Each structure stands twice: as structure tokens, then as C-alpha cells.
Length: 479
Image (cartoon, rainbow, N blue to C red; front, top):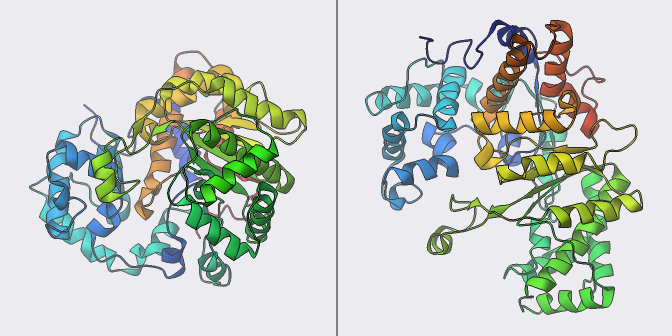
């Protein structure tokens, strides 16, 4: 019997152990997509207790607690103290065998708090006191966490109207050992069928100092903001959309749809798809001009529980996987950009694991000269962010393309303690590679395999996004 969470955790053979411990483990982290708050980095936030950093906005944990019958008021509400909320999480965790949260939680406890036991109702008080005591040290302020995690660069998620004031403060602070760059996330201007669209359009007009009554004027306003983000070091854009449409329309019709929404009226489904398609085409072309990477996350069934959406709002753990087929539309969208040589580097993420093979085969139809895997199937996302989900994504990528060119893991998290997910991914990757070698499916060429593991862990993403960290000598394991 193997001990729980040993140094060879998830590494089932000697080749895997060598690849992880001698190669992947030592690589720094480049987190090209996450939802952490740049203000907290700029101010080097100190958390009061473990509930703040663990349960404050983590819908993964909230869903687990709900499944255990904990009342909502004692999860996201104010019906109990932070200590009691922590106890609720400790009560459900021992029953969550097979859930990645069990592994993530204990990796975080071990790496950041040097706790080698397990969290349970009986150990909750001990863990609570230990974590809270260590959170008061400089080592576990936000920047200390990033330093311990060997994070070299972070791309946050930022709205086009954001002032990026916190990014600027970080740039001017010589004591911050991590680069923090903005990433463009234009979801609010894409969701024309939402009630918030009309007031948001007015905010965009104000911040861009541009009157917006037509699509060309909207495009000009966005171009100004794109230029500003570019000046601030932005190199990637992300889009969280329900589906990828293919719905061409004339400019006059698009102007009419925009005016309808600007007046507070909701466009119908067909109008919404025409507007979204036009916007994505415009944005894709703008990204190509600037050398940015376009990321597209699609396939979520948002706010399935309407009553809880009304009570708590979006991104609170009431989304699920949508089953739909947009392969032809996605292919059409990419094809239109490719025809005019305006297709940017693109990473595609589907929430439905059934889309893995489709995305990998589609990506192979749009690769670009001089760019390794210009179109990529992104890391296992959200509900796929599990051991089996990562293995499935890696195997699909390998089956259809060149796994050695994959740009690897991202946290996609709101928690600063989530950087152990990179460790989790690297162990799974090395175990998969090692298993293929042990099975005689690949030569036992450790030097080649080790370089491949290092590339997937760090170098590929550095090259793909053009961050240039390797050239700038940013690879020391110590910050």
C-alpha cells in the first residue's frame, strides 16, 4: 500500500518519477489564465483566516458542501461564522473520495502550511489554528504565496473598461517579484441579450470618449481600449461564451440590433447570434494585428438553478455542462478569419468532454506556418479539471496532434493557494508519459522526454504567448 500524498503521489512507475522529480517539478509557473485579483497582489493582502482564502469565492467547495446538505445561509450567507463554515467543509471532505478537491485541499495544506495529516471533523480545530497562525506571517501574504509557488508571470482577467490601475502600481513596484499582466475579457460587450448591456455600453462610450450608436463606432471604441491594454502588456484575450455562432449579417442589420439593445430591448436568439458572430470576427482580427492569443471557453449551461441565480447571482456554483454541437459553426468562424490571414493564435476549451476529439481534429485543420500548434485544444477546463479529465485531454491531444507542443496548465482560479494545481497536472502528465514508456510505446529516452515535460510545464507557453521569460533570464527557481 502506498502512503497518501507521498513525494511520489500519482507517479506509478520509475520513468514517471524521474520525469517529474528531475524535470517538471523544478520548472517555474506561468499562469496565463486566472481570476485572481490584481489589487490583492498590489497591496500584498494578508488573509484573516483560512476560510477567507479557501471558501470566500470558491464555487467548487460550495457545490461540495451543498451536496452534503449544508444550508445555503451557512455556505455563502451570514448565518454562521467563518470557523463554522470551515467545519462544514471539513465534515464533507472525508466523504469526497475520487473528487479532485480532496487532492487539491491536502496538497495546499502540505505545501503552504506543512500539514501532513488529513482534514476531517476531528482535525478541523487543529488545522484551523495552524493555518490561521501561518497566514499571519509574511510568507503567506499574497506575494509570499506567489514566491513559494515559483510563479513568474500571471495574466489576470480584466474588463475592457478597467483602468488597470493595479497593474500599473505593480509595474512601478520593484519589490514585486512576479509579472502581472492584464488579459482582455470582453464578455459584457458580447452579451447583448443581457439587461446589463445597455448601461455597460454607456460606460464603454465614456471611458473610450467615443459616441456609440453604430457598429463602426463600437469597433472604434473597442480599438481604443485594445490599444490601451496592449500598451499595458496584454498578450491574450479570453471569451466565456455559451456557443460559437456562425451567423453572417449586413452592417445595416447589425446597427439595428445594436440600437435595439442600446434602448433596453432584448434582441432575439437570431439577432444575438448575428451580433456575437460579428463581434468575435472583429475581435479576432484585432488580436491578429497585435499578435495576441485568442482563448475561447464555451459550452457552459449557465445559471441552471434560476431561483439561486436570482438570490446569489452568476458564478456561484449553479452552472453545468451543456450538450450541444457547434462544430460546424466553430469551423466556419475559424475559416472566415483564415481566408484573409487574420486568424490569431487560438486556444479552444469546451466544457463538454465529448468535444475533445472534435476540437483536436478541428485544430489540425487550421495550423499555421512557423508556429507550433497555432490552434490548440486547451487544458482540461472546469468540470474536466480532474485526474481523469486531464488524462483524457492529454490523450486526445496526443492522438490527433503533437503533444510536445502543448502549452500546459493554467489555474483558472480565484484562490492564491490554487497553484498546487500545476503540480497536480505535472504529476499526471509525467505519469502518463512514463506509463507509455514502461509499456514499450515510446523509447526510454529520458533526455528527450525530460525536455518534453519541461516544455509543456513552462517553455511552450512562454514561446506561444511571446512573454520572453526564458530570454530574460527569469528561470531561476528562486525569485
